[in-house]
Amino acid sequence: MCGIVGLFLKQPKLEPELGALLSEMLDIMCDRGPDSAGFAVYGAGTPGFVKLTLRGPAGTDFEALGAEIGHRVTPRDTHGVLSVPAAEEPAVRAALARLAPGLRVVGAGSRMELYKEVGLPADVAKRFKLEAMSGTHAIGHTRMATESAVTTDGAHPFSTGPDQCLVHNGSLSNHAGVRRLLAREGLPVATENDSEVAAAYLTYRMRGGDTLGEALTHSLDDLDGFYTFVVGTESGFGVLRDPIACKPAVMAETDDYVAFGSEYRALAGLPGIGNARVFEPEPAKVYFWDRAA
Amino acid sequence: MSLSIKPVAATGETVFDLAAQPLRELNCALHKLSADTNETFWRVLNPAGRHAVAAGLDAPVIVEIDGPVGYYCAGMNKQASVIVNGNAGVGVGENMMSGFIHVRGDASQSAGATAHGGLLVIDGNASARCGISMKGIDIVVKGSIGHMSAFMAQAGTLTVLGDAGEALGDSLYEAKLFVRGSVASLGADCIEKEMREEHRALLAAKLEAAGILGEVDISEFRRYGSARTLYHFHVDNVSSY
Image 1 (cartoon, rainbow over the protein chains, first blue to last red):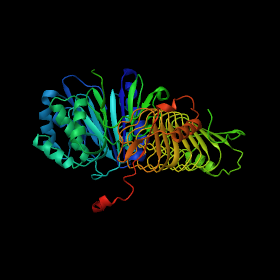
Image 2: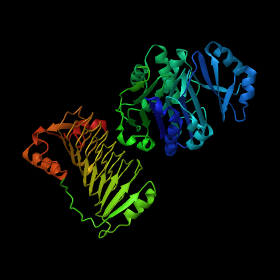
Image 3: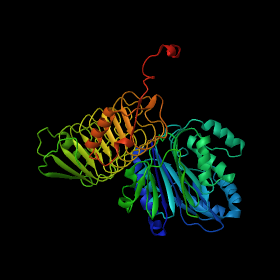
């Protein structure tokens, strides 16, 4: 099992409530994945700047670290976020690796922030104060581990490219082969997790010029196994289920939002859900929404 | 709408609000009902997609649920009539033995799975694996059904006013399938069969039970069933065993 939630806003009016709405959805999906949880939120960005989400060992002093590298780091529990001019990103990453070798950059992009931890999803959301976050879209995951250990590294979402993230319910059977392909293509996968391979595969396709929709279409040919994926990019939100539709998925669409839940329960508290178009995404059919379009 | 079940005289309405009262209390109360109970009409409010609402009933009562339900709603049902004014999640009416379930929206996967008897009517669409391993239930879907429906279906009828997805009736035993619209593909050992008078009469009876006799043209339906080549031993296949 595992639980997925996602919310993509079409109108700005709900943006201040994005975190609160996702937090409630994530809470309800605790039953499907009590091991660990994570979420990516696409909030405000500054043109020309890159946001880096850092994860450090418990007790990491992000403010002191920020002072050392000359950029303010906003701490959120075990994570910290800093915004640096895009040109300085390689130098900042090098400095972080030198000064804090136990620290990982878990997400990078113009707008995405990414948080994940081991623990009950409701607690994880509270630790990071998800309910106070705002943004245009967000994706969350509650994990019941099957293919790799219960660690923070194994928690979703996985981000393998700027502003890109993926959450997965299911298990891939050919991830070792795809992992070798990606390594040859210069996209090493950091963890042993099969879902990170899927994330890196989409990054590989999009790096080669695919849109999110095209990358998802190609994954139908190249990824084997059971999956429901929900994917975020800087401006887009995509959903794909395997051709057998092994893993559950239900969606709701209104004039204000597109929402995804592993079960309807996760959507039941959304505003206007009573009048939403509620549907199950078809197997092997690519769904994506893009704000830029 | 005429139902195949006998109408139960409602002697009053017991209202249960799941926003305020635990689901387990509702199901416990429903399980305690005896065959001669006077509490014959139950209205359930705010189900909010909860699982196993009104599962395991065994009394001739009517339970009307106002809103969408989660997994296994009315599962294992005997005697009761369960009406869902909304969508139903995975496995609505799974393993039903008798009674009546009416989903006034869409149903998710595995609707009516393994059910032995009773009638399941779905006003909207049912997704994949509708009627999987059904063993005697009658299912009427007014919309379309998803892939792998009636997989290994053993007995009963599946009537679909819309279309059927891929691999309809794969490894089918003796269930009878009636589809008015298109069939994306037939599963292994499932074939189209001649629609004879007795099949038209059977289909008419199921449409009547679902309250839609006369609303659709029976001549538009096609019948599908088992070619019976998979489940009988055939000496030519001996080397496969």
